[in-house]
Image 1 (tube, rainbow, N blue to C red):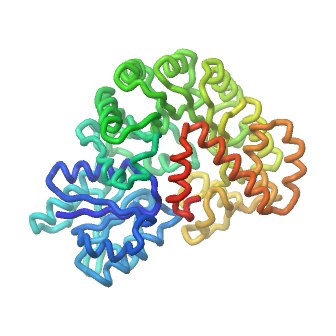
Image 2 (cartoon, rainbow, N blue to C red; image 1 turned 120 degrees about the horizontal axis):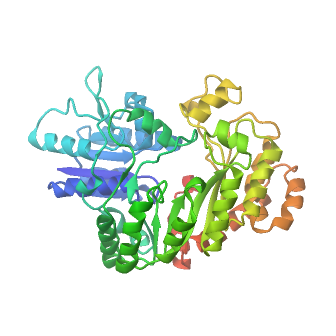
Image 3 (cartoon, rainbow, N blue to C red; image 1 turned 135 degrees about the horizontal axis):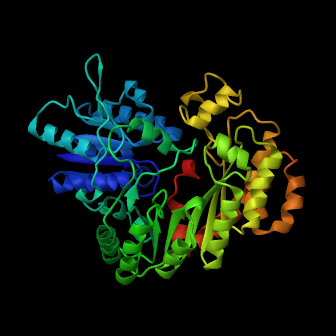
Length: 470
């Protein structure tokens, strides 16, 4: 049986890699096509003639896979079309759209395997947990499946489906996941919705066996080469006991520099020292807002400015790079609050301060908060999504253009604090191309430094990135 992934953006994703590995383990054929690398995508899909065509679907581009499905179905209606990923998980009504045969919700490795096994045997696809299926005149809505309790039972991710493309294979920095889930309840994060979907469906926060993670990294290093490791777990330092086992093993067996995600309230001297001693060169930490009240009441993130400053000081004390995440155009936020966010990042000397404009998705806690307080219309929904987190925000906020300009000049102010008084004056001007150029130039320069990208890596990304995702 053949399963074909098609993906719009050009970045390897954990979901397709694990699903591919599991399907191949059970004798199925799996391939992946990157839309940007295929001049005649639909023709190529028809040539492959998969039993199931699966596309990971994201909310800010949810109509793209639907359009591809419709084109494919016109040419070969026998191909079963399956949407997976975040959008059908949170907004399953997309199955009602013409061209979509089925959706997979949540962690769906075993659900998709069951689909393939049943197709192989000529059996009905009814009743598979985690799958919604379009029937003749109705939609079968199956309950979401329980979370896989033991991640080590899943095979190592199949990276070949991505690394057949040379520009991805040759990137010197590669990403790895040592676990799944997050313990926090941030109002702007998808994990908040996932936890509600999976209530009573198993342990949300799970970690892989340290030896299995090391084995995966060594396998990638041997087959494809890499110079730097990036751990993309939501919170890498969540379990210090796990770190004490994993990190010395990593240093002994792998010995490559790595970066990881932390939260300020979990950063301690012992953890930072443990990271540093075993190869960590930098951490990423969410700040989101420089205003404690907004951070607590709007973002549901109970972390103080003192904790952020203390964590940053520890990171800097041990010589690690500090990357920070920030959001502007938040409900209740004033221009002064946004400037406070800029100044907090400058104070802690963030080496790379990523800054976005809030793009609230339907049903998120922060979206409901904004609607109740008239920052968004009561009927705000999927029809209003657009623009992207670096381009616009739909919130009705006073002096909105100042936020838009500040987002472009944010990085400049963090890296060169003496420009902040000038930035306070510049944001009063209408948004313009020059501010956008400054923002992109600073972003690209320091992004490459923080993540240790080579010039070859930068050129590859520049040539292959989907313009929609910039």
